[in-house]
Amino acid sequence: MATDEDRLPDYKTQKKKPTSDEDKRKKKIVPGSLMKAVIRPGGGEVTPTDGDQVIYHCTIRTLDGVVIQSTRREFGGNGAPIRHVLGKSKMILGLLEGIPTMLTGEVAMFKMKPEMHYGEEDCPVSVDDRFPKDSELHFEIELIDFSKVKVISEDLGVLKKVIDEGQGWETPREPYEVKAWISARSGEGKMVLSRAKQPVHFTLGKSEVRDVLGDGRLIKRRIRDGRGEFPMDCPLHDSLLRVHYKGILLNGAKTVFYDTKVDNHGQPLEFSSGEGLVPEGFEMCVRLMLPGELALVTCPHEYAYDKFQRPANVPEGAHIQWEIELLEFEMPKDWTGFNFRQIMEDVEKIKGTGNRLFKEGKYQLAKAKYEKVLREFKHVNPQDDDEGKEFSDTRNLLHLNVAACFLKMGDCRKSIEECNKVLDANPIHVKALYRRGMAYMTAGDFEEARNDLNKMMSIDKSSEPTAKAALLKLKKEEQEVHRRASYQFKGLFDKNPGEISEAGVGEREEIATENNNDEHHHDLVNNNEQDIEQVAAPTRLSFMLGLLPKVKRLFTAVGLNRCTILTPDLSRSSGIGSCQSTVINYSLSLVSLIV
Image (tube, rainbow, N blue to C red; front, side, top):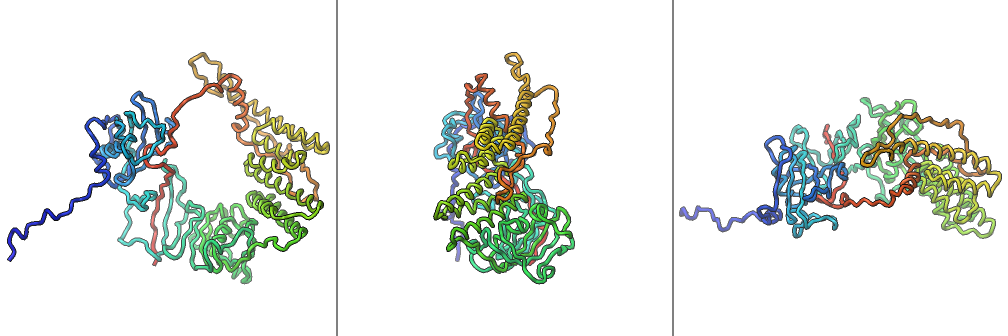
């Protein structure tokens, strides 16, 4: 028979809740080590608790008011607020204790002794060595918002906040097909991915979904597995591919605008990768497929037919869906077993493809063609002087073609580097001097450009018309820079000591635009030479790029280059919490599930 004593709970055997690391840290707090003053009251009655994501700005000052570090732009920060999950994120002790006392919208000043911030023994948050962690500091905190979140990944890289509750109780799982609306904002709230016209389709589980661009716009969904191992057995650059595909408009009716099995008499599409023969989004996804694989690709208009010949039955700006089956592909041939003449014939074919791509404005693809040959040239050994000269001339032209691509792509520095590879071996190479001179001019380095163009004329008298036309353009560019500089700094130093003059304040002068039709540059190669046509007059870069060398000389002349401003550049340290990185907030709206 049980007694009353038997029914009493055994308090001695009950386990106590283990003490967390944060609780152990909080026991270190002593009176006076953390003090709070409310600068601006917040709203509501609820304060953050464990499991809440808190979003806040933080500015750290010395007791004298000197800003050491801040998230705010006006104090040298990047403008993005900090996001921490209470009870999960690594935080300094003072904020771990102080933020849960704040209301939404509140601004408070926390006065912390060293042991409450980064001076704490075994502080879990690292800080730059220059940070005054042994000093008493003021932490100004603005609590922007807080809310309950679900931690999706252990590193806190992915958090989920429910904006609108869904319906029912079921959630997606393998192998459900999912439709979802997706949008994304940066940590500062800036929209980086707007909601598309159509929801994103994908299937959980074996049907692999790949976000090709990383922003949710170009999605490849595998419907049927292929043969081999990814990515070793995927097509390489310059492979010959054979595919069947069906093109579908993402409209309400999902109109099929092309089907190789119907509109191409059952024959597959055959094309070489890397030659711009199919839309960019199409090729990017096919390059991620295995032989025999069937995939469904959802593509935005800018990677579909905006920059490619658009079929007559595809409206402008249309989002496209392709159902693609990769039948097979052939690997690009190498030059094993080729003699020198066979190699050079193949080079001419590849170079010709690059020239076509350049003329079509596909500079990245053209550059890839030229660079491929230059890589393979490292394994080519001419056998006599004639072969050596042909090899050297071709290699120089390829470097200059790469330089032309870089110049068209706006990378003047790399364009100059490619020209230098030719001039290092042959300092009097006229065409290399011309192309480097144009790159210098585009970069705003007019003196170097003038030197190259004058040297070019001194070497080859027949190049005078081309060089003089370039020098005339250079003079106009230089005069324009001086005119703008004079206007920009007009009156800058006219004020009395202690007064500030705004640069460029005065009458607004209208800047005349040049008529591009009046400027022509002639190529230095013969019409029958298999080189790309001379790059058109370089696009004018921003005014500031050309102005920088002038401003530097102006400041040197007045002695400002001797002044040094000392500021603690701590904005890039791990600082106020865990290492800060770009935060993207994705907004997802689940449309439907299909089993």
